[in-house]
Image 1 (tube, rainbow, N blue to C red):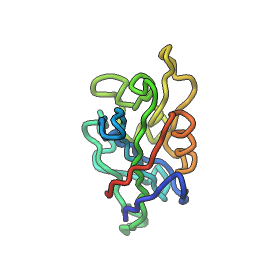
Image 2: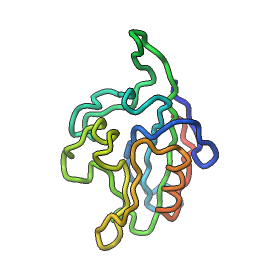
Image 3: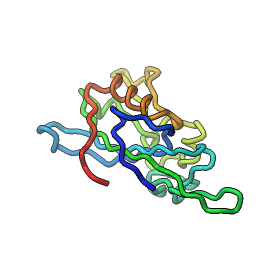
Image 4: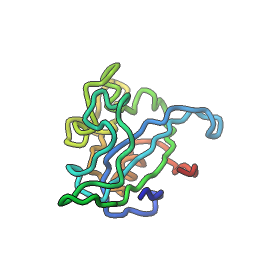
Length: 162
């Protein structure tokens, strides 16, 4: 089951397992923004999977996380929490990075990212350095919101329905 949440107000027991870059637009108050969708799972990351999560590059292969998994030979349903955010920040095009930004056809699959090979999101400063600010798989919704709020000037929950 997928459940939409507002990470600025609620933090169910779950961990970040997938980040979808939904692209850029100019629709928010005439300012260019970045839209991302965040997925949180309530099962261990090692048990969470999705379509083609073991294929590289993840940005061209991976699908959303599955809301069921196999346990002791039985298919078990669980909750995937979803939130959409809009990020607008000064020079954000230069500062926010995804694993797919490591080059055309990144060398990562979702399983790599969720095992800690690279952060789901990181911020580069003007000099091009990461500056130690990154968001890794396994972060709680609360920690994810705090990261987004601290790193970016404005982080707003998108009101769009799934």
